[in-house]
Image 1 (cartoon, rainbow, N blue to C red):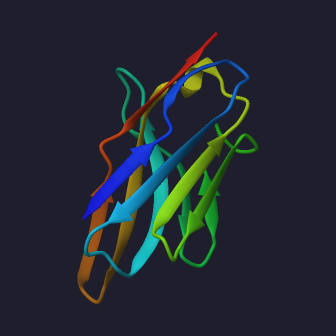
Image 2 (image 1 turned 135 degrees about the vertical axis):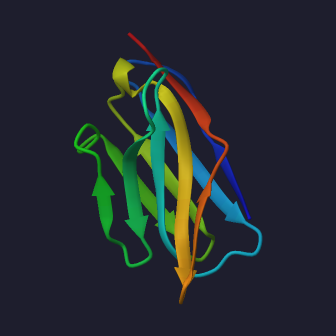
Amino acid sequence: VQLVESGGGLVQAGGSLRLSCAASGSISNINTMGWYRQAPGKQREFVASRTSGGNTDYADSVKGRFTISRDNAKNTVSLQMNSLKPEDTAVYYCNVKGGWGLFTYDYWGQGTQVTVSS
């Protein structure tokens, strides 16, 4: 299974970026697709997630600014980031969770850098 992220980059404060992640390989029964981020010297933190049923969850720090979307048929998830702030600077990781019965999985992408300049 491979998670391929795209869309990171450098943007000025107040700007927007869109991250995308595509899951490929032998994967099924995906439950949750989401995004985490890790800033230099900090622990990885939750950003947003969306279940296969459409339930979404956001970190308080991004509510109202970020929007997560998902295409269940294509196994893709995107994160639209608006009104970006310098504190949003981090490496953003795509995450996929799922499974069936006693078997569960938790896959991570390689990360994509987002830098917001002030």
